[in-house]
Image (cartoon, rainbow, N blue to C red; front, side, top):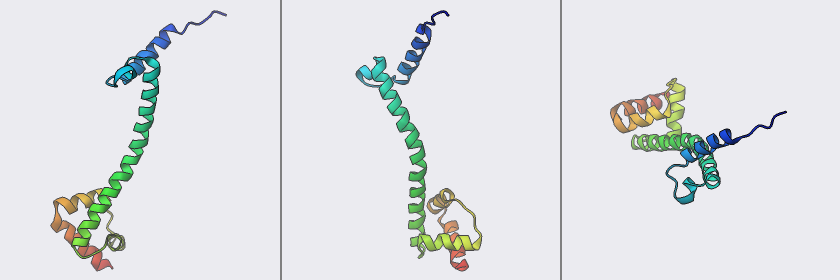
Length: 117
């Protein structure tokens, strides 16, 4: 059986990793071994933070809704309970945006939740 050389494949892989490492400081963008370590670490961070971003934004939306509901004389948990009982299905991102940009509509939403309780 013939021997298979990996020169072309290895060169392509090295070029790919070095392209991903473009912009890193010093040897981390020039030497394959250092670049590979850094790129793999960076990709794992990127994956982790794509998951974390969803949690962080949800916390932000809840904090904004809580502030707006307290300004209308109600707590966040009572507000969500009231909306659920009233049958209002609206996600927190939209409610947060409404609390910031359309205070009058958000006040009506709070009144709906109060009526349902």
